[in-house]
Length: 348
View 1: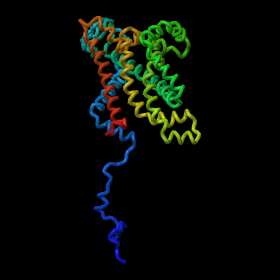
View 2 (view 1 turned 120 degrees about the vertical axis):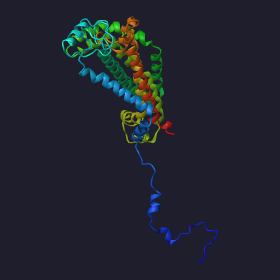
View 3 (view 1 turned 90 degrees about the horizontal axis):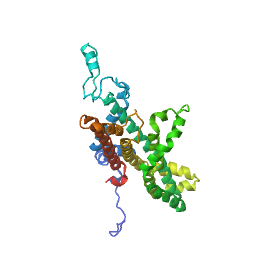
View 4 (view 1 turned 135 degrees about the horizontal axis):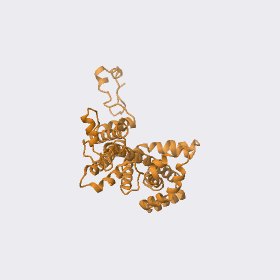
């Protein structure tokens, strides 16, 4: 039967059905393996040299703050007799006499402060306190902000309207004034609570630091709430949310398992960028005398104590100031790297 030259049917031959050769198979090799969202994000982050250097610096500061003090020979509150205002690597007269007698005396690497406390261990403990305050405050902001913003966006309507107007009102409250008021109002209740068994650690922190945590819980979550709300507003119309509703899944489980889970990349980036903001706020308040209770140090209180002796011992001011700048810069650069790695909009 003659083939119609105007036909659009494929003209197949028996050799078209032969198995592919080795060369043909190799030409079909996939150039890049399929990876998960997290694995792809980690790969992209590892290629960002600035972010990796920042992560390395943060790890070093963590080791310096949390591990080194455990075997450092001096305590942050120990006052060494005759060792007032020593320069770095100097010894007091009593320590020098011990050295002359053949004893080993660990040097004061960064010198001492005006009452004879080793400054290196105080900088380590100050870094620890500032980091802990930043991390704890950021966790408080993450929990409250993500829950508030997701609820407002998911239910929408008048619920969203009322909740977001509350956010607008909170934005107008001066945080410094509230911290000062809370410090005075919480002083007496905290003194009574410290005497209760199990709450003695509140006396170590002091009413100022407790007030800072309260203010973070009351005020500083609004930015996180707005960010989560914008993400949930886009995700709640997705097909998997509609399917979950059709299957009778509760609203709380949809928010927790489906919406917030799909916001996790954005939450990580926002949380990482919130940490330096919290550290700076704590350092600023400690510099003003509204931070941790003495003798517990923080980087802000160390800078505040050293400012009066800037002409004679400038290193006592510059060391905590440089460390604050280094920590904040490293967290900001790491946050930018995480945003570039995990934000799908920036993939190309």
